[in-house]
Image 1 (cartoon, helix red, strand yellow):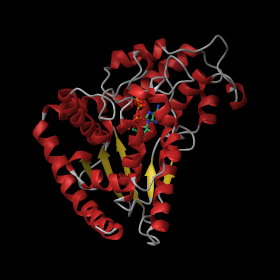
Image 2: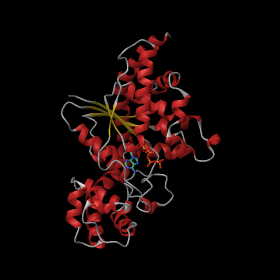
Image 3: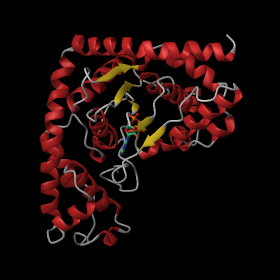
Length: 333
Ligand code: AQP
């Protein structure tokens, strides 16, 4: 069945291997499946829920777009745009915010993690982030949303909002209830320094992640320094228990070589860690370096990137504006 796909990435800098494996790589596969209609959004409205330097934000919007293109997302096949160019997202979000319940938002673990102990000082935007995400998805009648596991809870909230709206306004089927598309095995790539923490843009240690713009030497060095333990390479999956760092490195290798973790374990079971790490570095360099070089090349042509975004936003606007107009009519405006 044809799928309508919507997903987004925040232009918050330091795009990393977790974003690639958990999201962008999957976007490319979905785009290349027959009949899928894909919309990939640089979610800049989401980015400002935490303080951004305006100049850096502009660069990061272009960098994220360049990463999409360099990874294989094609503007001829998919709609690529940045969220702030389509006002319907903000308008829709306000209306949906009047449908969502405080109790639902209070359960969102990402807000708790990002706001930390001092949640009184967090922005309201950070708190209502999932409502904007619901608008992003629902305005395009997306049927499927590829996300990393960390976003699953937000997607469930989008479904709740859609259902409550349809019920409250007696408009059955006005909003689709979108399904998450979460990769089974490699949904969460972990920090290279701590296998219990996800690889993240905001980790203060650059050694915790492989950035999509890292050079070959940086990649090799980071993998060399990645945390392991004193035990041997595992010989089967049961030996991965309580070895999150090893599981993570094996997952990265498996994902990039398109094989399951069982095969990777078999491939390296009689090798030592330095041999495994050398081959892991090779495959990361092989996949990431061309992307990295292409991002750097594309970023220099700011006009080209801006044109792609403007073009994409015109296509997106056509769809989202129509839906918001219907939405306004239903609520009585
Ligand atoms: N470590 C990860 N493993 C797998 N998928 C990941 N994603 C993010 N980190 C991992 C997925 O990438 C997509 C885009 O993420 P985002 O940029 O919108 O925001 P994020 O999840 O907040 O990214 P970070 O790196 O975790 O940023 P900070 O440090 O600011 O919190 C999403 O589909 C996400 O699931």
